Amino acid sequence: MASPAPEPAEEVRAVHRCRVEWSDTDASGHYHNSAVVRFMEAAEAALVRERGLVGYFGAAPRVRYEVDFTAPLWFQQEVTTVLTVERVGTSSMTFRFEVWGEEIDGRPRQLAASGRCTVVHVPQRADRASAPWPAEWITALTPAPAPGAGTGGGGSRQP
Image 1 (cartoon, helix red, strand yellow):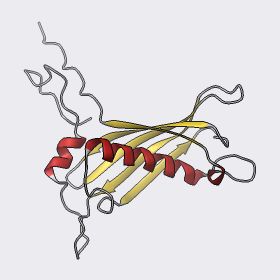
Image 2 (tube, helix red, strand yellow; image 1 turned 60 degrees about the horizontal axis):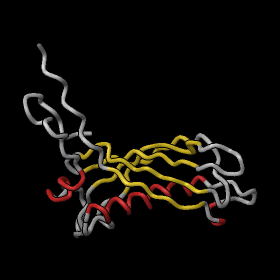
Image 3 (spheres, helix red, strand yellow; image 1 turned 60 degrees about the vertical axis):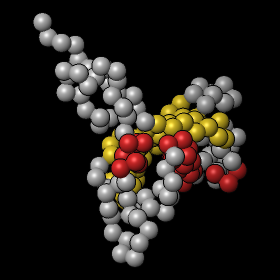
Image 4 (cartoon, rainbow, N blue to C red; image 1 turned 90 degrees about the vertical axis):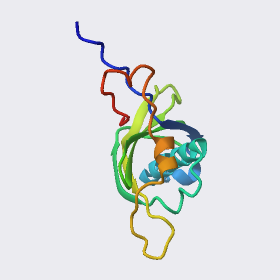
């Protein structure tokens, strides 16, 4: 009899909640595309704080950003952004994110945007070249295997 598949590892993620502010909108009250970047970065900041990554900001510039816009967000609408660590490489990291517009004026909760963002580790030094992530950051950003996943199943720590 085959052994059961290992339980998937818990994801490393952060959730950020806010409202669409007037400065996030155009004259019609519909959000600017740049607001999605702000929401994603606020969730990233929450993740960094929660994981205790001292020195992350200023050392992790964006190198790729892609987004699919699927529904409008409106002035004063509540927004929930979920940011998940998708992959931690040697010197790069990819996040996936979802920006949800919560129910407003009889409209149901909808996915407003989703996408991915890749950052690289560029330590504060003169040559500004990418370098491997510090070991403690990799530990903080990599999900621990589910209980029992490390026995007999060849489970991976990659999400």
